[in-house]
Length: 132
Image 1 (cartoon, helix red, strand yellow):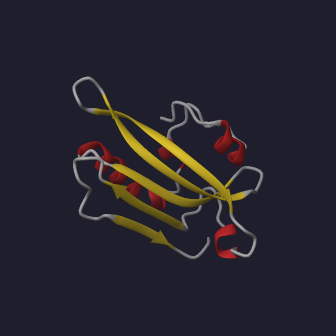
Image 2: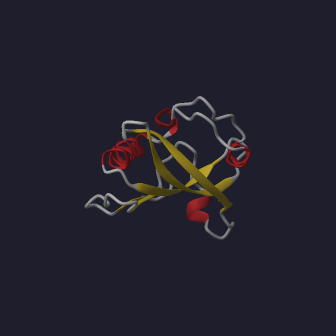
Image 3: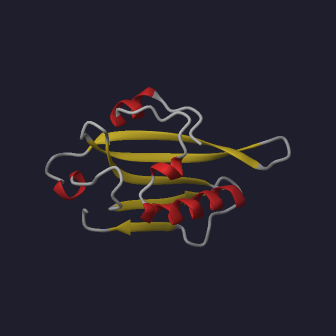
């Protein structure tokens, strides 16, 4: 569940996201990749980043680049993730990215960063498809 989301990314989406389940918002083609991604962040633990184009409710297309850091409880178990997202408008000349819908799976890039326990063997993951 998204506990709190900043006003910047919420402004791009033109939709309140606090309290929503991230997996309910993902395109079906991204669910397995994100499940695996969060499993890796939790089990190693490691940091990770995702990059994908999104379209907000008002039609604005932007590139969302998010870094996730695992947060542990007193016992050392990952309980939460701190995500920091940078949203940038996608220039009009990138028409293949601009045609993406918020529920369409087109492009997803996942990578990991070592914060002391290593990184998964599959260091980088990409989904790239023509716009739907």
